[in-house]
Length: 283
Figure 1 (cartoon, rainbow, N blue to C red):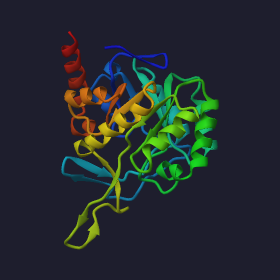
Figure 2: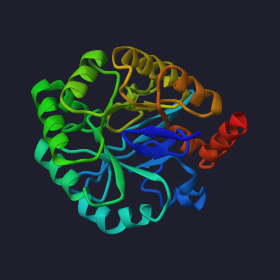
Figure 3: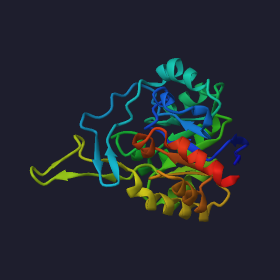
């Protein structure tokens, strides 16, 4: 079930989405990362981030809401410790990159140019930070600048990860017209949970990003809408994937690859079960 995107061969359509798989060390205790089509790093930022105060992840019906806030040890630590670990596996590494401005994005992307990373994915849609993330998309000119300058900073394919907030079609058009080679849809939409007993929000920050089967219809519709506008643009579809059927549905609406995020938290071996199911279906 080989797939080719921007000249890169994927052995299957299954990609670990940025976040729940960390940078692979813990997940590799449960699955062989080399069996995956691709692995997306946890979003890397130029400086270390401690994330949001706890509680920052809560269960809801058919999913979770997280408010992690891009916790990560920073770019230099990623280069030193996490990337060498990931590079030993025979899978396509996708670097998820976050930042506050084009300078930070470009610095990291240039530094990754001579590594085994195959695709750079700009996380412009994280719902859990007050600067960067989805806040960037509120400024059209800043969004254009970041995409243009990062496009010029690398020879590798450039993807942009979007959520459902804002005008999705218009944002997709801005990304494509300014140099994005592909799109990742969808990032976790914003949501909250409240306790009626004391009328307090369950998350310390108040709200976070919803993941899990509850958002699958949103993800499917988003991929479908954008694929109709840009039929030649590769899309990594994600949102609520917990079964082979979910993967086939995303492929049916136009996704080229399919990301698993929440499903990894549910069962770390889920990606292998899905790949085996797809292999059986194709024989």
